[in-house]
Length: 113
Length: 110
Image (cartoon, rainbow over all chains, first blue to last red):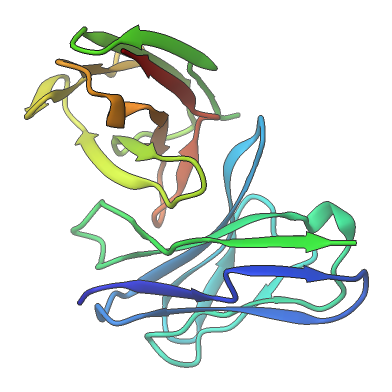
């Protein structure tokens, strides 16, 4: 079954404790993105990746890091989480430039105390 | 700058027709998307318009006017399961640069 998976789905942590949210896709898609969704602000892109070892900043990259060492995985790293990073996070993938639909993962709800 | 506007909330009755509008001002345009998002779930793709006109897909249709920076999503024969948020998103220039509106929460009542 074609899918995008994220782990963990829910996480409560404390300020400053490094964490990683994983994203994995089995569709061999080239493009992957991370979004955060906050009430009243909608979905905002954090980082994106066009292919292995190619990443770039989205609209709200501060406080986040990503890596793309393999095509299927695109982890989101919070080196020192802060309460303003409490949000709902979505990973999304797209097959390639000829395609437009983004396939979203199930989401990760993160709370930073 | 980039700006996408859509109403915050709408209500409608089961079986009715509802139109959700979206206006946009973006620095580039390579298409407009509509996504449906049920509470606590991931967005799912509904439609994509890149040329002016109406695209119909079952009970859902989407319209685009590039000159007016305007789109709408039309939902016919509303069902209770259509209660969800509807997200308008514009694809700008460059790779997969999607800018989302804040979404319209639609509540369908019996």
